Structure formats: structure tokens, C-alpha cells
Length: 481
Image 1 (tube, rainbow, N blue to C red):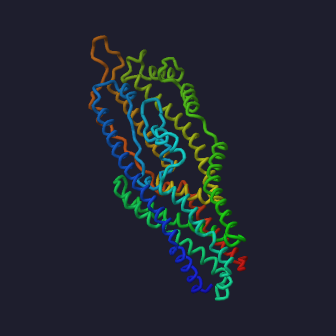
Image 2: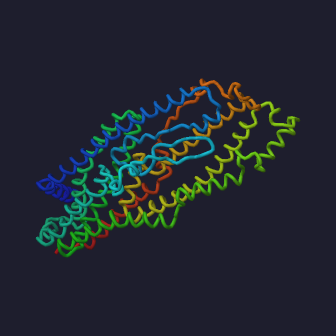
Image 3: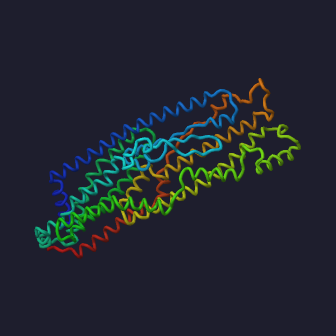
């Protein structure tokens, strides 16, 4: 392939697109909307971070200022933990608006995350949030298709394709040149946005700069591949269409199918194929299974009666009051262990269903590249479901350690003999509450996210190879007149 001819066609195509005043106007408008979105979301993000810091400080202060209490009362007093969104959520907010950010932790019960943006912002947020990622994934492809629909068919109508051929350009030069020229112009929508995202996210001071840079560097090639596919689609459809109108209508249909209908249809199919129980049904079944295993609050429960009998036999006493430790605390510790194991088992089954839904949608990235870029972008920005699951796991680990530490305090310091009326209450010193560490949410690393969600990256590479193959095949059948 003579590179001089290819380079001329690439340069000519790119320059023609740049010279179009309406093209530059559209590019500027799109970039302005992206910058405005980044600015608005950055202000929202900083406001949310400051509020979370304030609430965390208030929760911690109230916890440490609790007076002398019985440890079990403190276990039911509970603790609030918060999830801070990743700073790159100002570029792609992913699922963050639909998932809770606060969990109330207490003994014997595992609560779900609450206070999502969608739950407190009315119905409008459910139609999709205005973010620069949404613009780059959905709006820019439509613009690229409008810019590229006539690159081949119009030149065929004007008989200039034949002139290019006479001047020595091969069919392959023409097709590759048009696609690469359109693709290079499409990068004007992308390249100015990511540095601004990097610069803005760096001011968040919630994660290390290295993490943000690494995530941005993973986003860049992913979106470049996506735009290469869109450019290929536009020019190939243009090359096989008889008229400009046919090419335009066909490309608009492709955009509707790939960006609107398929993603919604696949999401609906995944939810029906791998259905999940409602929150009420999940908690009802969980409670039933815990009661079957053993109710630590029921003195006549068979499981705990066996434990009681074995303890009395082991220590050679006839009553729990004679045990050298607090029996109620021991029972609560065993009950916490049982309920946590059952909860984790139920939660794993539930998460497996969500994982199947996610995997089903990711696999369709090999059919619809817009799905592949959406999933990859969410994983790279830490706004995907996997990152949310890590928050739940960290919160549950913290809750379990807190509950068991309080049970240990009860076992160690509370007497089996109930205090008499008017006597000193069964409490421990309030300074014990200050010894509990605060909850620190750790972001899921990019490596861990990609390891668990590699399908989207593989789908994008598949589409890159598919585009090269399609271009080579289409160039053989290109009609010049």
C-alpha cells in the first residue's frame, strides 16, 4: 500500500472536516457541554465529600461521647459508615447515583446501603445523568455518523472517487484514508476532555494522583477504539449505500439500535433471566434461616441449650451465674457468628445473580460495542457494581469486628448476676468506645476491577480486530461509480 496516497487522503479528509465551520461549531459546543458537566459534577463531588467528612465526624463524636453503658446496648446503638465516590465519578458517574452510600451497622443485623441519589432526586435521574461520559458514549457517536455518512457515497455521486483511482489511489487507500481521517477528527471530542478530568480529579485529594493517571490512561485507548469502530461503521455504510439519504437513514438506525434499544433490551433480558428477590423477600428468608440455626435471644432455643449444658458440665457448675465469664455475652458472640455466616451465604447467592446479570450484559459487548465501552468506563472510573460490592464487604467486616469486640467486653467485664434494684448498673467505662477504630473506606484498585471485569476490555479488542477485517473486505468490493 503506497503510504503517500493513504496519507494524502487521510490529511484531505481531516482538513475538509476541520474547514467546515459547522463541524467546528459542533465540536466547540460538545466540548463546552463536557466541561460544564465536569465543573458541575466537581462542585457536587466536593460538596458531597465535605458533607461526608462532617457527618463522619459527627457520628464519631456521638459514639465516643456515649456515657458508661452495657456493651450490648452499645451494639444496638449502632454506627453509620459512609462511602465516598471515586473522584473520576465526575467524568462517569456509572451506577453511583443508583446505589446507596450509607450503611447503619448494628449487632445481629446486616443492613443494606441507603440514601442513593436516584432515591432522593425524583424520577428525572432515572432517565440518565448528564455526564461527559454520557456525551462521549452516546452523543458524539451520532455526530460522527452525521459527519461520515457522505464521505464515500457523495464522492461517488460526484464521480470524484474515479478521479482518485486514476491518480493512483487504490480502493484500500480510499477506504482506510476516509476512516482514519474521520477517526482523527473524532478525537477532537475526546482528547481535550480527559486532561481536564485528570486536572480536576487531582484537586479532590481523596486518592493518589498515580491512581487517577493510571485510570485515565486506560480510558484513552478504550474510547479511541470505540470511535474507530464508529468511524468504520460510518464510512463502510457510506461505501455500500446507493445514495446519501440511504446512508444517513441507515446510520441513524444503527445508532438507535446500538446506543438506545440494544442496551435497554439486554438489561431487561438480564433482569428476567437472572431474577433477584425483593428486599423484603430477601430479609424474610434470611430471618427464617437465622431462627432455624439458633435464636440467641431465646433461652429455650435447642442450639443454645446444648451450648449451655456443655458449659455447665465443663465448668462443673449448676447455674450460668456460677460461670467465670458473662454467659449472655458468650451467647451473643455465638449468635453473631451464626447470623453473620448465614447473611454472608445469602449475600453471596444474591451477588451471584447480579454477577450473572452483569456478565450477560458484558458478553453482549461482543455484539454491541457501546455496551463494552460503558462497562469498561464504569470499571475504570470505580463507579461499577463491583466497587459497590467491595464497600458492602468492608462495611460488614467492620460491623462484625465491632459487634464481637463489644461481646468480648461483655464477657470480660459484666457479671452474670443481675444488679439489684437501686444498685450500680451493669455498665463498663465509656472510654472503651474511644478504642474502636473509625471506618475507613478503601477504593477498589484498577487492577482488581479489571481482573474481575476483563470481558469488556476483550470485547473492545475484538471490535478493533473486527474493524480491520471489515475494512479489508469492504475495500475489495468498493464501487467507484
